[in-house]
Structures are given as structure tokens and as C-alpha cells.
Image (cartoon, helix red, strand yellow):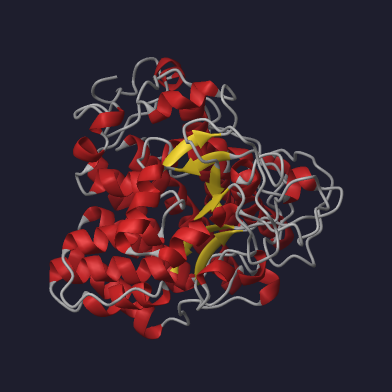
Length: 476
């Protein structure tokens, strides 16, 4: 795998936290043998793990393309002909040689390498033991986080547990072995992570973030009893609640609010846009007005909102051309957009014009919400349905915020549909269709083929670099 051994980059001296204190040292690379001498070096390595999260390789095109376009809720959008290659993912014409699949793979393994740099080197540094334990826990959380995205996309993957001493063969593990590894990392991280962090450290992993990721992993593994236990703990004992205003929830002022378990930080720092911003919002926002206009909601998603009588979440999730927002902006964009008759955009990625643009013309100052309390409630409802218990209460807490009537005895389809509407445009629908076995029926009209498209292909370049040791996924 090209890039398995990476010189640790300390370009992103991020403590990944609130917006008024970030400072960015000059870019540079320090060879590993000259680094990891003291606690300050260890902290820079931990900061680099977090800083990398807002990069193009983790939070922009490949993340949005692989996690959104093959679903029935998101289309490419933008102007006709712009990036027409991306429609290969909408129509299931993507191949094992395409760049976005390669970038997704290498981007996550680069993130794993940053975690392994900490896990390999920090234990030998003489430093405060409590701080050391926390740093190691953060690195295990982050490694499990990256492997979670890999296992959903590719199935069983090579597990790299430390910084390699040199080139070595890569052997795929089984699907269950990969899930076991992720679960072990998260469980090991939980005891040594803090329950809360000060505002100056917002964005760093907490115990609750690790428990939330663990609950989601257990949902994917269908370990329903344990999933319910972990999500019960978060609901009953964590400091979380639903933010009452669904529109305001997705504006920058509500980052790290009472609904947030984990977010990737994007912060405008004058003169340092390449280091501070994330292009997650910019690529999706209103074309020519706030961003590029990619990744737009489909008519099917709009119809699902209408069928549920869900006016609240529809108005927030889908911004149509001509809409006036609560922040006083009129959505202009472009008159003609690929794939839809009425131009529209992902409203959850909308950064109002009242937010100063200090690093460019578009809205980049929006965190990537990775895990919200609303999803924990829906995970809990799904686990309760399977394991036995009260699925209605957590489900109806989410519905109440959307001004929808409660469901007395929700079935599994009710819970799945609630996930669809609550998490629309947040890169979960496609993975949900796969994990629940519905992809073959729901996505057949787009070209999904059972026995092939359950997994993305291992990038062909990686198979070749491994000398054929990396086994390709079925059908590819």
C-alpha cells in the first residue's frame, strides 16, 4: 500500500478547538527519528490526527461521493457537464481504477498512520502519565474511527497496528476480524478519555464520543443487546439533549451544542484557509453564491418528507432556488442544475452570508457533524426493537422536535424511515440501505447489482502494489 510509511507532518498544529485561539505554525516535516522526544512533541502528533480530519481527503469529495451519490437521496447536482464523471457513482458505473475510491482508501490509511505514529512512539516518552494515557486513548479512538469508514466501504481490510519498519506485505483480514479490531480500539479508548473537555479543546474525543461510535459499530454488527446497553448509558447518563430548533442546529453558532457527540472542526483563520477550513460545506453549498452546488437532494427524498408530513426537516434539508432563509438570504444559485427540474441544495451545508468570509468567497466555516444525539436515540430505538424494550420513547423524542405525531408501537420500517428523514444529507442513507439488506431492491433502478455493489472495489493500484496479495472484492 503506497503511503503506508508516512513521515509525520506537523503542519497542522491544531488543538482542534474553538474558533478564537487557533494558531498555525509554518508548514514543515520532521523526520520521525528526530521527533517524539517530549510531551510537546507528543501533543503535536495528537493535534496532527485531528487536523487531518478537515482535509480534502477525509471530509470533501471522496467522503461525499462514496457516502452519498450511490444512494437514492443525493445527486451530483452542479451545472450540467461539470464533473460528469461523478455520475458513474450515481449509476453504478464506477470502476476499480477510479481516483475517488483510491483517495478514500489512501486518505483513511493516512489517518490510521497518524494514529499509529502516536501509538508506536508516545508510550516511550517520559511525560505526565495521565496525559500520556489520554493521548493513547485518543489515538485508538481515531484509528477505530478511520477503520469504521473503511470496513463499511470495502469489508475486511488490512489491519495495521503500528508504524511499519519498512515495506511489508498486506493481507486482508475478514469482515468480522476488522469489526473486532474497531470495537477493541473503541473499548480500549473509553476509560482514558475525559467525559468533557473545556471549550479550548472542543473537537477532541471524549468518553461519550467513543461510546457513541461504539453504539454505532454495535448497530452495524447487529449486537442488539449490547447496542441497547451502550446507547442507554449515553441517553441516561450523558450530558446530551436534542437542540430544540432544527434549523438553528446546523448553523455555526450551534457547533458543539448539547446535541453534539463528535464533530470535525472547520475554522476560518485569516491567511490560513488551506489549513483551517474544510471544504465539506463549500462543495455542497449554493452554487456561485455560497459554494459549488454539488450533492443535491433528490425528488425521492423530497417526496419522503412530504409523505411523512415532515415540513420542518424538509425546509431545513432542502433549499430550493428562490427560498428565503431565516437568516435573510434568498437562495439564488443557478437556473439549470444537473439531475433536477427545480434547482436545490443541501440546506444542512448552508453557511449564511452573515458569517464573515475571511478565507475565500464561499462558506467554509462549518463543522462536519459526525455524531449527533438524535442518532443515538434512533440507534437506541432500533436496538430496543430487536432486543426487546421501549423503542417508542427514543423515536418519538426525535419526531417531537420535527412537530410530528408520536408512533405508539413503531415497527422497524418506522425506525428506518425516521433515520432517513432525520439524517438526510448527512452521509448515512447509503450505508443504512446496505447494512439493512435493502440496497438491492431500493437501488436496483440506478444499476445496483446484488453480489457486487455491496462493497466498493479495492483500488486496483493497491492490489498491484501488493503484488497481488490484496484480494479483490467479488464482482470486480
